[in-house]
Image (cartoon, rainbow, N blue to C red; front, side, top):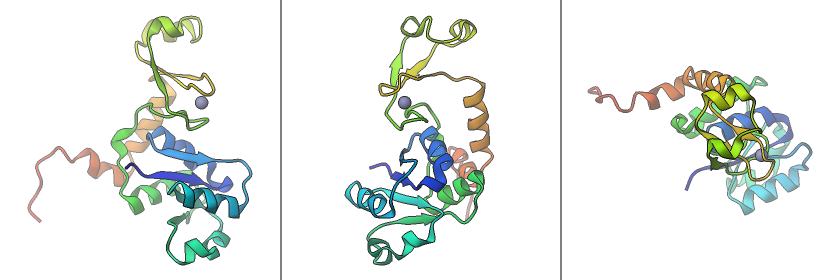
Length: 170
Ligand SMILES: [Zn+2]
């Protein structure tokens, strides 16, 4: 089963990046530590936080619950840490999840989105995805391409991109 996350209120941008990579990453603006831990336990989610207090919670100190304590306050460095700690697959950087609300996206035909996307987008894009929860429509535009390029620059992702190449002798 694919790894799932719950992000503390202090690492919201990190959750958006993980969603962009196709990972299920819950995030709430305001959530009590206790509730965060409860959801994580119930749904087997890895907790992402900048808050050292969570480390003292019982399920965390006993090792029942996996927590990644982000060392940096910069989103990019946090993402590098998560990718490396969990050996995440960066190749899943496709639209499978809504970056705003984490819902799974649904494939749409161009005729379904006509009038709902800017005309220049409609003329140039053939593949669309839509969020069933907030109705947002996604396509492979410049914003998405920039995010994908950022991901490809991350070291932990590079070895995944090279996996198709023949393995060198150790
Ligand atoms: Zn949405």
